[in-house]
Amino acid sequence: MLIFNHSSFMTFTLMGIPGLELQHLWLSLPFSSMFLAILIGNGVILFLVATDPTLHTPMYLLLSLLMAADLVSTLSLMPKLLCLFWFNDRNIAASACFTQMFFIHGASVIRSALLVAMAFDRYVAVCEPLRYNTILSHSLVRCLGLVALAKGVILILPMPLLLQRLTFCHMVIPHTYCDHMAVVKMACDHTRPNRIYGLSVVLLVVGLDLLLISFSYALILKAVVHLNSQDATCKALNTCSAHFFVILVTYVPALFSSLIHRIGHNIPPHAHILLANLYLLLPSMLNPIIYGIKMMEIRDKVTKCLCKGIASAVGPGNKSVSK
Image 1: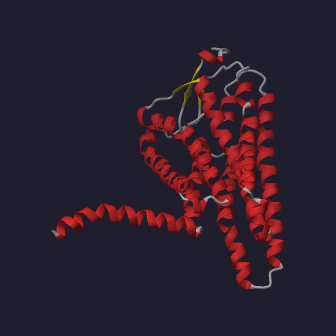
Image 2: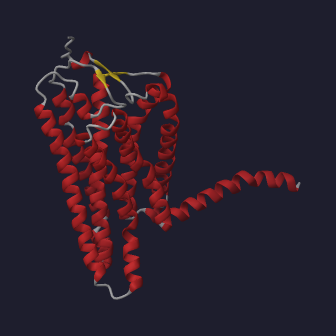
Image 3: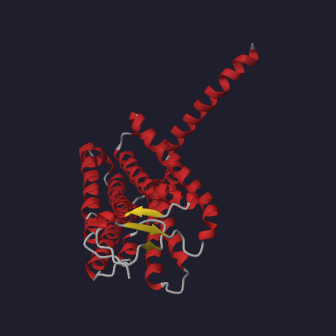
């Protein structure tokens, strides 16, 4: 048995999707389409928020931070995954593997923390509308963003550091990326501290963040119930609808994937891996669509940009025809 204990010289091999290796090229089509949609969707919203002063409000600033976290997660995952699918490039240095792990899991923690901040934003918008600008100042939004960043770094940084102390007996990872638990299973050392820490992070992030989000929405529903007007009730619920759908898109696939990973022993390995990829990519792809449909400001800005682009492209042709 080969034993590897110098992480700086190790190279892991990513298997891809076990059982579907011959279909990797075909699988690259939906994955590359999702990658393109994520880049365009998140990039458009980031560009609009950055260039339009009317969108420099707490809600859209937090939304732009969420889009940035989605882009970091996607850009940490997709280049290596597409190289694996297109060129069968399976090797990844241990240092690159641990770096990818840090950015993918760190971005997921930051995304979850930002959803908590956005739940607080929706609570203030519904329950304290007259004090909205006073409570959610730009300085508070910056603090919320820094807290989310610090949470991601502090919670995830120990994962690769703890892995570096391990001795590895297996170097072939049955996954498309360096997932923490997938790498832990490659070790032949005592991995209980790694497993306990990984589970603790999941419970702390998902459990605590969902608890805080649920508490915010309980207060929102309590305030909505006491509204006298049906129009006011619909308006209050519509204010929260985009954020609520984003929560569902983010947490439901993640919880389902985690549940399948732990109790779905009869489910084929490729189903586990596909779910693990989808729960990372689906929120990043759907979040811009949800906010683009539900938020009038975003929808109007995108429509105006498209109209200007079409007009500028068609304009010179019309002039030449008229001549």
